[in-house]
Amino acid sequence: MRLILDEEETWSLMTLITAQVLDQVELSDEAVQAIRDWRAGVVEGNAAMEAVANGVNEALGNTIDEELTRQIRRRDYYRTVR
Image (tube, rainbow, N blue to C red; front, side, top):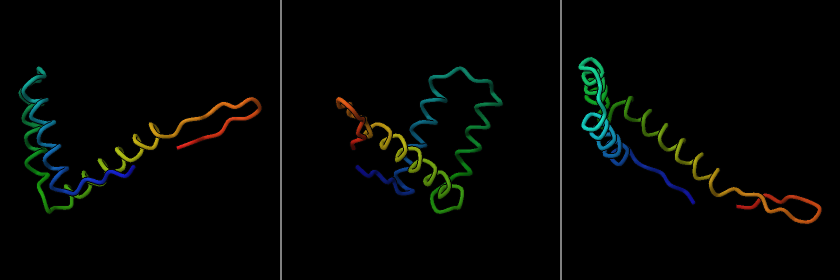
């Protein structure tokens, strides 16, 4: 299974996550402002957003690969299956 998010999808996901953190986590005023400043600096079309999208895609790909890879135990050997 292959999942790749483009910059627009990554931006939407990032906005949702940061909004949930800001709304539901007790943070200091400095931390809230730092998150808002970071979110304002990472917008669609700039290099920072491309780096975030690449990082998210790499993390998702690694997680999916780990979940889908499993070992089957036979009598005399182990076989890794996807």
